[in-house]
Length: 138
Image (cartoon, rainbow, N blue to C red):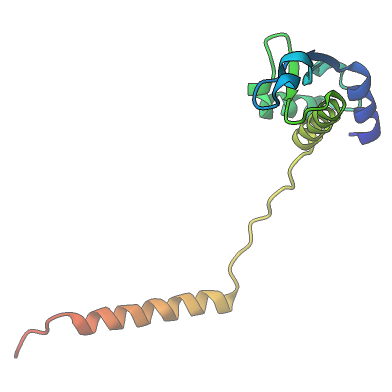
């Protein structure tokens, strides 16, 4: 994955739509279209391999529409410009994070000392509980 190509394709191909944002803000909320909705087609993302694209579709399944578009919404700020920048940053982080392949896990075996320590503690617990049992009188 070439990150710079990916970010450029996101900035170039994403479609921004603006609408009125809800919540507090007084007259500003009723007059100004500050809410940003970014849409980008998964196919238009440059710099992703086939494996990264399929992983992206798998991880972002709930955010991808039936038209194969990723949707990101930002309406936290009162400024349209700030909301637009936040939406781009969020979209870039989502795509880059889901396209990154996870490290392969190498299972580790417990060391000999750890095994012996575990068995010793089991023996101690066993002895402790054995002392609590009633002993039949002879």
